[in-house]
Length: 298
Image (cartoon, rainbow, N blue to C red; front, side, top):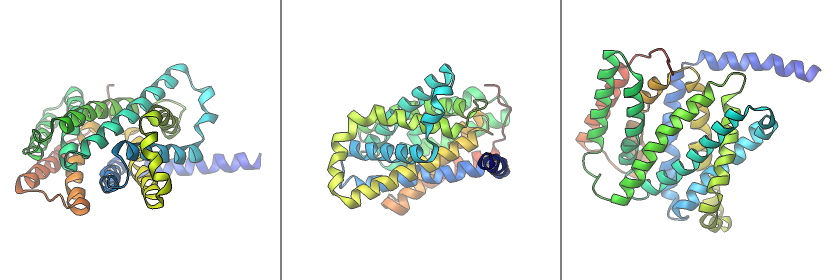
């Protein structure tokens, strides 16, 4: 009884602390990790096959979530509709991450990030009603266009994977946003269950490639680090942000990702931006400053 009282006493304090942090701060930190992890994954491609790195990312994240949240304890009590939603999110996470890694193996990180924005900008256009926010969407679209100005025709397979990733990223925003708004259920717990579903989906795809990392301690530890940086920290922060942002506002904030990817690609991978890239980043940042949240009608 005393233990339960302690848990009940701690939970409101934790919830209160998370509510005091602005949702944009959660998103900003998430956007940093969203590409910091993949930038290290690119370096890992020299040791492990692309599909193996994707497998290690999801497997590591699933293991962390399993130890932390133990989603199987709440799964039996979840309503059928939420279970189906979680499974759908898990499938999207698995296929999205696979397409993303196949794309960044062929194209610069900033280019993939810019193409990735195509899906979310459609969500933003659907969700926004005010003239001010429509201008912000147009500005972000122009900025992303500048960021994609050179390399789109350089590798058709890479571009196809990036476009598939863009569609799946839009699906991720829709599904994860629904998960974050389920009454009486922690979005992080649902995310943990979804990550286990993602591991089931990707297991036959990348397990063989990842097996080569078992004898390479450096690659194995790097893969675990990529999983935590790419699929634990940012997705948890996404849930905290989505719980307080309407879907269209979140979709527009995703415009930060190409800018973050450009900076991280330059620092970690020496993929230096041109003057046009910098102009694209400036447009994206201006759009973020212009945007104002709207009521969520979804």
